[in-house]
Image (cartoon, rainbow, N blue to C red; front, top):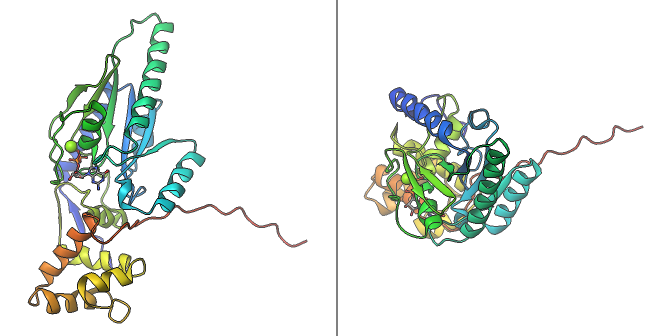
Length: 291
Ligand SMILES: Nc1nc2c(ncn2[C@@H]2O[C@H](COP(=O)(O)OP(=O)(O)O)[C@@H](O)[C@H]2O)c(=O)[nH]1
Ligand SMILES: [Mg+2]
């Protein structure tokens, strides 16, 4: 990703400010938080200020779209979060896999919240859980699965959910579906471009060909064979933007836009197989210095 300029991805400052206000509003009302991440990019899809904003609230981390990455990597990510003391769940909110475990954990947390309220002499009430995450990571799909019916609008278009809305999922629990949160700052272009590649980005301005060029750079070492099969050009021979240009010539009448669009669409829909764009960094203990 060397060829990133500082402004490859631009969010509109007004949208960031609004998303931030909404996030704070949601968290103020929430007893616990379900933080939904995109399993393909667990780090880039984690809001940088989120730990501080969540504060003392209980939190479950959800690695959603887990069907889009290899099982072995999913395992490593789960271990990585658990090693940090975070309670983490892998889900596929499209077919419901892993969602029951999230529901059970949410119920357990809800019971804890009410025990605490009772100890303080407060009356038990439905516990409020805020489902937060970047646009399009699958918050609404997860909520629909948790409720067991379609209550939240879930769609491929980032930013479909517009207002805060409480959804009752049981006697004890209300969930808050919300519009996506947005990045607190624009400088982190490495994360931003990954969010764009995965379409977890909401309304942002970027040039599809440039985002696709970065996607190609990331994907070539991971799935060269698959790219060759799908697009007819061997990325081990021509790389990066030159590869996209050849694909454009070969398949899209020279349209770099269409080649770029197709590459991103294929990746986003899992058509290129299970591909993770981030792997957990294991902190290696320093070796003993030689005596
Ligand atoms: N492959 C896959 N797609 C998912 C999953 N969860 C949600 N989606 C899809 O991702 C898109 C965005 O989902 P949505 O629930 O609207 O995201 P939200 O903006 O966070 O509420 C939709 O097209 C969903 O069908 C999942 O676990 N796996
Ligand atoms: Mg939504």
